[in-house]
Structures are given as C-alpha cells and as structure tokens.
Length: 296
Image 1 (cartoon, rainbow, N blue to C red):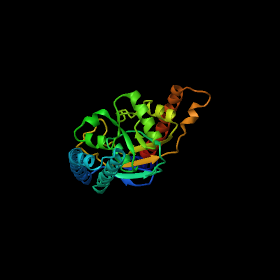
Image 2 (image 1 turned 60 degrees about the vertical axis):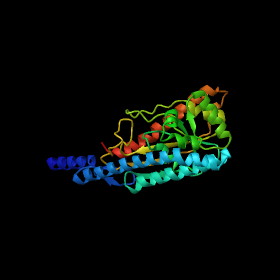
Image 3 (image 1 turned 90 degrees about the horizontal axis):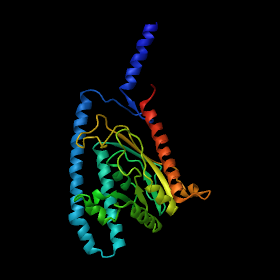
Image 4 (image 1 turned 45 degrees about the vertical axis):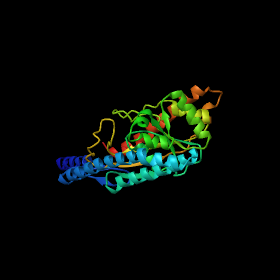
C-alpha cells in the first residue's frame, strides 16, 4: 500500500511539474511535438512582427511626422495628433500579437483615461512593456531612453509625440514635473531598463522625486509574464517554449504627500517612496510567482 501511494504521489508531482497553471486554472503543457511546432510558428510570427515594427517606425520617421509637421503648425495640436496615431499603432501591434497567439494578455485595474496629471510607474520585465501600456492608456506620454530618440526607427515617433527623453537625470525630473503640472499622464519605468536576469527589482529614485515634487497621483502597475519574453538575455527571434500569459495590473493609487509628513525633506521622502514601490513590486510579483509554481 505504501508503495502504491508513493507511486501515485510521484506521478502527481511529475504531472504538476509538466503543467504550469495560472490562478484562472488555465493549464498549458509545454511538451511534445505539437509544442515544438507551436514554438516554431510563434517564432516566425515574432520575427514578422519585428519587421512590421521596423516598417511602422520608418513610416513614422520619414512620412507621418514630417507631413504632420507641415500640415499642423500648432505644436500642442500636432503632438496630440501624433500621440493618437502612436496609440492606434501600438494598440494594433499588441492586438496583432494576441491574434497571432504570441501572447495571452489580461489588463485589469488600469483605466484607459486616468485623471490628468497622473504618473504611472511599472516594473519592466520585457521589451514590449511600453507598447502594452501606450496601447492601453490614451494620450499618455512616456519617458524614453536617449538611445531610442536617436534610433532611426523609433526616433521619429518619439520626437513627433514629444515624449520625455531621459538624457539628464536632473533635467528629467524638472521636465516631468512641468508636464504633470500641465495635465499630462506620464508612463515611467523606475528601473530605467529591463529587469536584470536575476529577477531582482532595482529602482532608481527619479520617479519618486517626480512624484514628491509634483505631489501627483501615482498609480503603480505590475507586469507579469508566465514565461520570459524579450528579456535582456532572450533571443529576439526565438519565442518561448510556452505561449506567455501576460497580466498587467493597476494597483491602488498612492498619494506621495504622505511621505512628506513629519517635515521630511524631499530627498528622504523620495527614498521612502522608492522603497515603498520596491516592496510593493516584490510582494505582488512574489504572490504571482508562488501561484504559478504551485505546491512544492
């Protein structure tokens, strides 16, 4: 009897390891010839969408932005128009990823139209995080790397949409505070780069300084992938063995004024807010990871 029970327990344990389950109960089995064929198909789709992204970027830089600049002389109006185009493009691009079954995407708790002057801060596990958020939040601006601004593919869209460029940390804080005061919604990744291969969340204090100085509403967002996709060590042309499930979750808004209580300086308040955000990401992502792994 003991031997039979032991064999059953071992089979159950093996079955669990071969099946990755998310909280909704949707199971995906990553083994067999069918899975290999599926991965090949998703890899082809991934390569094709990279080519489409390059085409979109080239058209924005060479045709759309220059033409819009000639036709619309008023800069604020021109910026709004180009941002609407960027919103449509990114939304269509993410929808194409879902249609081609490259990812399964769920967005919850994050409004498409947050209150004016909101700062959305998110962790950054993948290359497509910004596309997902810009394709969900209408008329949002994003803080982009300097390297993306000078890139011939992405530079035209970034300049045309008047996104904030992270070239100088001090100037960045002042620029973002001014944008928020003018009613812009900004998307910012406090890690300033994709999460490291060890999975440790390392936040810089720029986002917290912006929040504390502008006293804007901060909406923390967690982005979770069931499988690594377009991480720092991923091959851009190779899809994961299992189609990733992506969950984007907006959490309760944070009032940065609470970190200034007791006469705290801006620097101290920024440190406290940064640590608060880091712990929030660690806690929320840990819960998701434990749910995904299941019982030991």
